Length: 345
Image (cartoon, rainbow, N blue to C red):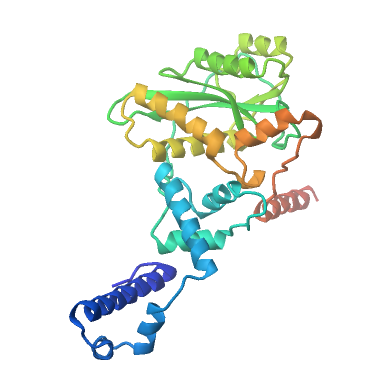
């Protein structure tokens, strides 16, 4: 009956089944005066087990679990189950008042599993065909995959992503200016066309928000970013230009990852968007949700908007959030360096 369910959920379902049986015994005893001993015998359960259930009082842990579960359900309902247990744990802890006990991921995972609350994230696996263009102007890779930034407006990334509008041949294009310090979308623009006007609109929005920024701007070698007028415009604003190497999309990894994330969020939060106007509203709302409500582990559960607000309000004491290096990546690059040394010898 419970085959295929996770182990924790199997245990919980069996417990729910027993509780239903206990409730039935209680009801029959009250309504028909049937013997509890006889009913327990017929149901093949111990009478002591029934009385233990009857006299049970919720423990502190159970009461806290009920409170946590209520909030989990509210968050899941508000965002169409966008969060898995890691993000849900960050969101819950971000709401705690001073002095409240920390909520652990294992607790959240157990409650979500037992109650059948699963993330509805859609994973993208799309192939894009890019047409090579001859660039007017290129720039060196000044960023060198150093994605850490010590303050806002030190390093910006930009890129363009597209999404097909369901049921049509039309596409919507999103260009974003992305701050590496707090993963904050400083400026963005949406359009029906992938052209220079889209990039100009996104950059204008970023400069309107941060008029005094002289951040390094990193991009790929798309035709929108290699134009001479674009280079001159950056120079006028005192912004160094950096570009990924040919065929090295990982050089702009955080930007690429954010684009995938925001498309996942749009798909989950607004799955019924079927026209350009609806998709435009959905992307704008998804970006606002990301800024204000998407907790991030790197920022100790705070959202990008919270981190940026803290940095702006206290510029003399900006908190640093270094990127944690995954051991797998360290081992990978260590092997690469070892092979290079062997070939050199």
